[in-house]
Image (cartoon, rainbow over all chains, first blue to last red; front, side, top):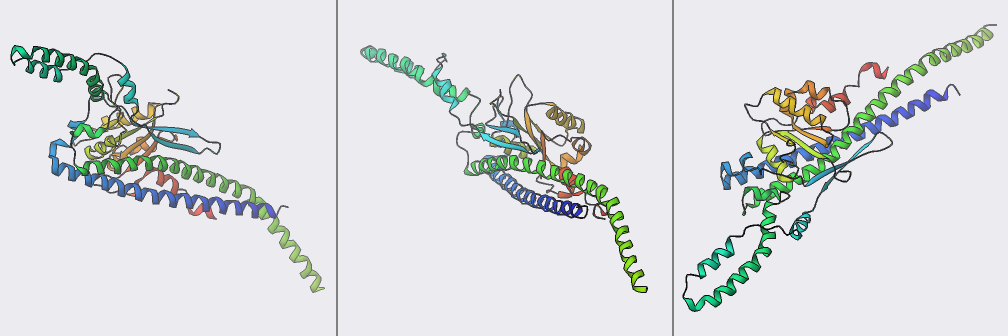
Length: 233
Length: 119
């Protein structure tokens, strides 16, 4: 029984070491992918800057109010593992704002109505109907305007209405980077926990096998002495 | 609040922060401080360190992304952070490629292998 325990613990240690090395390798691979995606993103941003202008793609374009579109759900599991799950919220929340009727001044259609008034008196009936139409249009147009004021919008819109394809490519690269970051964060914790466990087990193994190994070595030496003494006789 | 999830913070140069904000992680409103910091040439190390520590103190940030050359400036603060959450991820920058030997996490993971462990 005393001889089996060190072997079993050594096998366990080997398994843990192999697990640690596997996780480390996986971490390195994901890091390489992350780094190359980030570099792709920078390259696309530089291309967009080249076509739009230096100051059109910079921190000056950041909105005054931002709401995060990505949230990370963190779960701590039993093995001290921590799970990070990056969730991208859909922009369906905009519909909720549409339903709330708060008045916003609508200048566009009213201006058209005013412009029509410059025609002759015979058109007054037509103008009245156009005014009615413009007043009907205003609540319909308001939700559209509200979407502009809604902070939870696509960050691409900060850089203009028509953005080059390279900026969209940059956005998609960085979206992938964000998802990978959550996986790498979880892997880092796994690697560190595996390393601590391995170090602790190595210390325990040294502590438990050290005196037992000496004792068993001493016994073996005594057993060898006895037959040699018998042989000499 | 329970179902809201946590944020990803970023401390980096202009292009890095622009990219991640394009990805949709940015939060900025009148009530709370932003979850990002654009580090420029004139940004002081004190400001970077204070921002990093403020992100650590916030309980609504799960991951902090930081350019590795900025992490080097506040290496002592990053090495002192031993908790799992928030997780600190070092990322390359345009002028400084990623160096695994400088990464705090990998140094902690690889540093255990000494000759004494395998006697």
